[in-house]
Image (cartoon, rainbow, N blue to C red; front, side, top):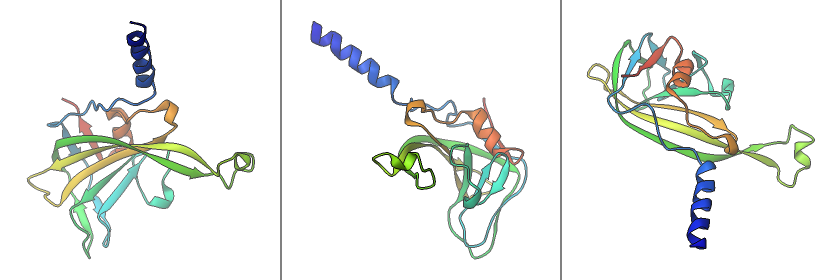
Length: 169
């Protein structure tokens, strides 16, 4: 009996340390494109953060960001035009990332030369009868492993800004 009680306590403690693999955004939800987005030639993605199109150099890793993914890289630019996508599948995953601390003198005195963060990502498989070349939206952010959560619809919409929005049913 004592062992069963300990098992419940350990399971309860373990559950507190891991994010739920749950998305409030379900298959069938609509993603509405309000303004044209351009994927540059030689690329297959366009990234948004704080409602603005950004490059990787401008990325703020701990802030919500989303990027649209095209099925293929093309030698000319690709347009994502205003319209509606249906979300066909939602997947959530996380990945541990090591953040170098070489620019932080006090932190670099620690035994390891990096800090740990977790990249929490939600992937949406998209479908549109008008835009078959765009098939995925990925939204993610880094967080401290002790304060871990996937992005909410509100946070995703803030990252997308006036360009697009997830319309909850």
